[in-house]
Length: 259
Image (cartoon, rainbow, N blue to C red; front, side, top):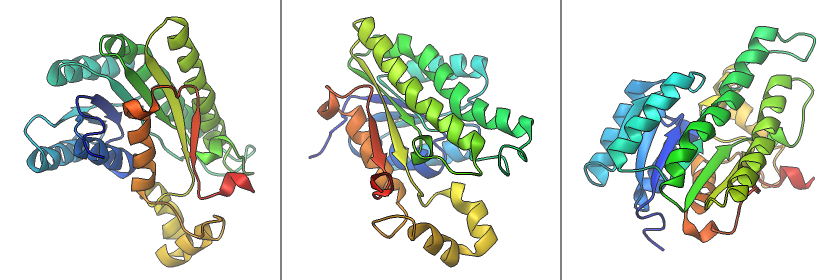
């Protein structure tokens, strides 16, 4: 298939690198216009230029956005709506791991920071994007959670709590839209270890090869994931192929949750 999201206009947070960049590339390759929002504005502009050169001028636009700042959300969404002629998809991808230690050791400031970046961003994004999505139905909201939002560990209280919140907030948004008779769907994606910069601290502690081997041993499929694995799930959820899918979660976890 080709042109699976032709005509779609997607606003993607954390789009300068990692999963956000992979999702933007996949959507642009299948015909969507993309708004690349990131606190790393230089990186977002660089990727936008690459996508415009690869596809066509206007395929991508870059916007500076701190996802914890409500006024920046309002401004970036309005600018993206004007630049693309509408917004029909929102990808809340921006997130951090952050914080060290278990619940007794983690600083409260670190906990609040992780919750703000990972959860407040999804709330603010959906709150302020819905008016644009309603004007461009059918619409889709894709929230990047984590397998850590479904399965806990002993030493990541903030990450577990924040990603679990994203999971249920996604369902709340889905039911809200359905209640309002909006053709706007909301779903979450739950990756396991993916080859992105979020693993850099772990690589720095053990070395790249040993770190990735340690992680791969926890995955039934025997490897860590690629950004494209998550991007393909997002592509499906934004495309009209998933028109009857809302309030759901897609686990991109190599089988971890099956154990």
